[in-house]
Each structure stands twice: as C-alpha cells, then as structure tokens.
Amino acid sequence: MTQQMTQNETRPVASNMSVVSNGRSTGNRRSTANPEAPATEDADPRGTEFPADYTIYKPNPRTTGGVVRFSLNRNKAALFVDAANQSGEKQFDWENKITMKWNLSDIGQVLATLQGGLTQAKLFHQSEKANSTFELTVRDDPGRAPYLLGMSRQIAADKSVRKVAIPLTHGEAAVLEATLRTAVSRLIGW
Image (cartoon, rainbow, N blue to C red; front, side, top):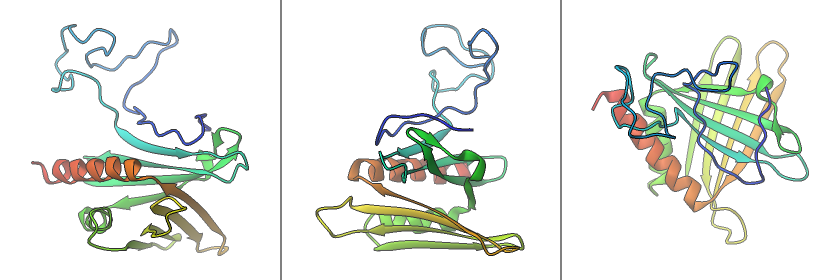
C-alpha cells in the first residue's frame, strides 16, 4: 500500500477507523465534524477523535526519502515503529516496511536522546528471521537537520538489508518526544 503526502509533511494518521463504501467512518466515536454530537458507549473519553499513530513523512524529488510511523498497541503493551522507503514522487513502499516492537526500555532510550541526556539512541533487536536496528542521532551541523532517524533490517536467510533514514526538525522531535511520553503513560496504565 502506498500513501501520498506533500514534501516534508508530518501528519498523524488515524488507523483505528473503518470506512464503508459511502466514505463515512463506521467507528463508534464522536464526529470531528460535529463535536457536540452525543458520544456512543465506547467513544473517546476526550470527546474528539485522536489519531492512533504519529507518522513523519519525508519525501523528496529524488525519491530517496522515507516515512516512519509510531503506533501504540495497548493489547500487546508495546509501541510499534514502522519505516518505509519512498517508492515514487509522493508514495511509500509499505509492503516492504521495516517493523520493530518497542518496550518501555526502548522508548526510554529514545526519550533520553530527545531530552538531551544522550547523543544517540541505538536499539538492536534480534530474532531467528531478522536483525533490526533503530538509531536516533543528534547532529551538531547547523546546515543539517538537528536529528537523524534511521532503521534497518537484515534478513537472516539471504543477508539482504533494507534501510530507511530521515532527518528530523526540532519541531518533529518535540512532537515525537511528547508522543513517546504519552505512550509510556498509557503502557504503564497511568
């Protein structure tokens, strides 16, 4: 599946809603078009719809960009991080995405970097099928984005490697930090 976005656009993506053929949402939440409408039993207690994911899109004209999506899964007590390379002008190769499942310790490493306690967060996950890495590096070069986020996955069977790397602005890093702090609270149950 590919998703189109404008260059350097960052947008949360709501993935918890289903769509029927008439194009209307079938989720049981209060409508953002009519926030005064009565909520159903399982409505979001905050009264409006909130996205389930935080996605950072970084397409470029050379089609060497990428996208990274952070998705909280309370049932699995984890945060899933997906990354995909750009496959066209404003399209991304979600079929060949890299996925990592983070626990609280992983989130803590990335938060420590975003909060200035570390200059780099480096996560490594190993399984029988593949090895995956996530890196968030603080960069001091004033001519470049202040953060570089990278993910890679090496398939054990054929040793093939997929990599995705995107720059992060201070604003994107601030939203990511807030998102991860919220994920920690929700995973702990506070």
